[in-house]
Each structure stands twice: as structure tokens, then as C-alpha cells.
Amino acid sequence: MSRYAPSARLSKLCNTAALTRPALETGSNCSFTPRKLRFFACFRLGRAALATFCSASQTPVSLLSCLLLALALFAADTLHGAESSEQASAQSGAQSGDDPVAHILARDAAPAGVVFEIVSGNSAYLDLALPRIESLSARLRERFPGLPVAVVSHGGEQFALASSAAQSNAVAHDSAQSLLADNVPVHICGTHASWRDLAAEDFPDYIDVAPSGPAQIRAYRELGYLLVDI
Image 1 (cartoon, rainbow, N blue to C red):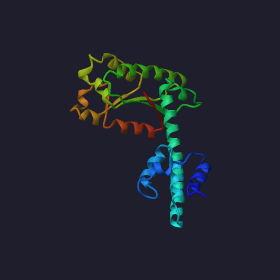
Image 2 (image 1 turned 135 degrees about the vertical axis):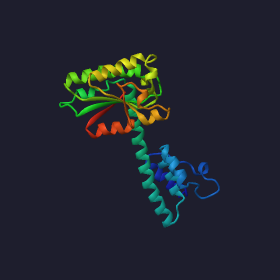
Image 3 (image 1 turned 60 degrees about the vertical axis):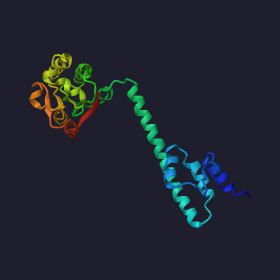
Image 4 (image 1 turned 90 degrees about the horizontal axis):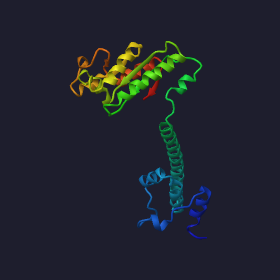
């Protein structure tokens, strides 16, 4: 029987083609190392690599190592496939343009509240985002009257809400004032502001400068608010 038969049999059992030994070995009985095997697992080649590896295993110790590597590779292969599927699903949802509050409107009971999170490096982004949140907030409260709603902006876009930017970002400032009038507070991140030497007094009184944007979101989440990314 050919010395390559174990590789062929294992390949058939794994339902994949084994990588040929001449293409993979470099002056040794088997060129695979744990680092290389992890690399192959990332590209869903774990089973093919394993087939070649096991064909070179001639001792009980080598066979035990092969078995342990098989378990590790199959786990890595499965996990990588699940992660890829989850990422693809998330990306598909993000690109579909679905209504960001549809799942909330479909609920039978109102949540404790809703917090909108904004993170963007585009200084003009709030001119679009805040008016959109006004509309979304109105729809949420039409479905659940009195629903608590809040906004947290903690990316580069938050600087459009500084007092010095009130004229150049008039739409965002007008929308922030309208939101506050409807009892929807607009928070920005004080830590991020400090990186540009801005303090609370550098923002108008209709903007709440929280010590930390992420911490403000966590506080809302701990109260049971649902998070909506805008």
C-alpha cells in the first residue's frame, strides 16, 4: 500500500482534498508547525493540512498530537466560519438601509428608553443625523407616548456643536435645541472635547457635556435603554 494512502483516506473522510506533501514539505518529514496550522485554519484549509500532517505521523505520540491538532483545527475552522457568517449578516443589515427603530416599534411593550449613539469623523454629519433622530423620536413616542429618549454624540462630529461652530452648523444646533425642547437631551463627550482643549463652557447650554460619552451610554443601558446606532 502506498505510504500516501493514510493521507488519501483521511482526505476522503474529511470530504476535502489533502494538500500534497511535495508542495508543503521543506526538507523535513512534515513541515507543519502550530503557527502554520493556525494559518491554514484561518483560510478553512485546516482539514486539508491535517490530512497531510497525519500521513507523516508514525508513532503513538505523533498520532496523539495529530488527534489533538484535529480537535483544535476543527474548532478553529467552525469558529472562523461562524464569525464570517455573523460578520456578513451584520454587514448585509448595515447596507440594507432598514429602519433603525422598526424592531422597537414592533414591540408589544415600551422599553425603559432609547439612546441614540452617534460616532462619525465627519464634522457635518450632525446636520443630517440630528434631524433624523427628531423624526425617529417622534415615531417612537407616537407608538409609546412619553418614551424617554436621549442622544450621545462622541466622535469627531461632536465639535460641530461647539458654540464657535453655531453658524457653520446651524442645522445641527437648531435640531439640538428642538430635541431638548422635546425632552430629548443631547450629550457630547467631555473627555474627547478636552483633547482639543475645549471645556463645558465652550458648548451652548442646550448641549450636555458628559464626562465620558461611552460611560454616558453605559449609564443609559444600565437603566434598560435600548441602543440605536445612527
